[in-house]
Length: 548
Image 1 (cartoon, rainbow, N blue to C red):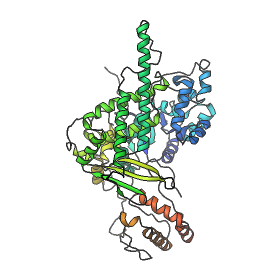
Image 2: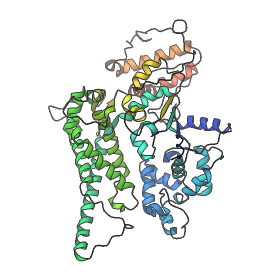
Image 3: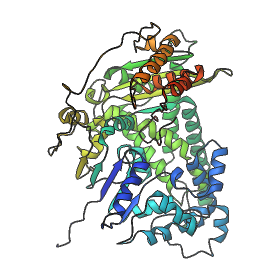
Image 4: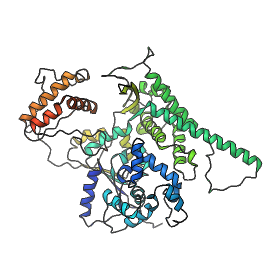
């Protein structure tokens, strides 16, 4: 009855791992020594150079290479790590270690040696160095340290993206969340509720789920024949096929239906094809409005009525894939699961939104969430010489509150408190409105720019060569606009001292203009004539250093 209340875990999140490293350095300078960990991807933590090399040869998927090594070594033995296991039985697992990853078996020992009271904080570089020294996996060590950590550092998307939260076993229920540099939270939340899924990924995912479904049928047929011949014997230590035959087949059917819909919507031989030209060798069709988006999703086979059933099947597939008792050939690979998760998470936000625990029926009954979406189908050529098509289905969330509500409510599993800090959040009312949270406690320092005395705003109608500088899509795709913009920027940078910050309305326009300037030599001319180095912001919330 007098059991003390559990102290909330603190999650400290910011935009990049380099910013987290700075915070950890500052933590080391204090006397505060909490149990802590830094969550990161395999790309940041993996110390197995053979795995990195093999992943690069296969297309760069280090996660899949890691999982294949764990399977080869036997999950839970020398090749894998499960919570609650020990590393003592080294001799019995020796043969497995040689087949799997030689670093994974030492993860728990590394975690226990680092995660102690009054221990100096460790960042990613520190844990990697210890992993190399002790021949132990820092990635799994960091995940294990999370189970007892009082303070967890991670990038934004580890908290805001439901797929990443699930993969990293992040539970925000009752926790205290601090989001630093919070002016980036709106964009990150929109990205977390949005998705881009390619047709070839859907086809591969469908084939993978169909393969597992067929394997299940074969195992059940063999088990049925065996049970008819011998008495039933229960042995929970042996991996078995799942009891239900329908989950993987259901997902295969759903993903296949979306793939067929996407193939049909992008078939330009069909006179009713909705695609319209959108630049050089690119076509796009966009649906807006809740009824239109919901109807297209329903035509593709995903609706409010079957979403619960699909999610249950997806969760079952994920559980089977991560269960060490599941036979290897009955596990769906990570790429297929990721494709399924990406699509279903965005569909869930669109069809359920913030009221994701309530059901509705019929088109247009959940406009508060689905109206905040745009559904798009785009088609382009990855290689113009080979005419290799790239067809993409996109669900674009315009409302950041849809994903942010996973942290602040309503519903179970939300955080106890969320603190946002930044030097550029004002005006706070509009910021809070965008995120759909009241933020009853606010503090604003009087350091903001006085727009009446410190800001001048003007519009430049034409460039140095006389081209109209109109940033509309129709104009911005023209080379004359892009070239004159570069020439004008070069002239302005000659007059403006110090640094210059140039904003573009979209990453696509930024990429298009940068590619054109590099092709024509304008990029190099601007740097040489002005003495200013050009950098572009990386796409996505988890990007690293800016690219030159």
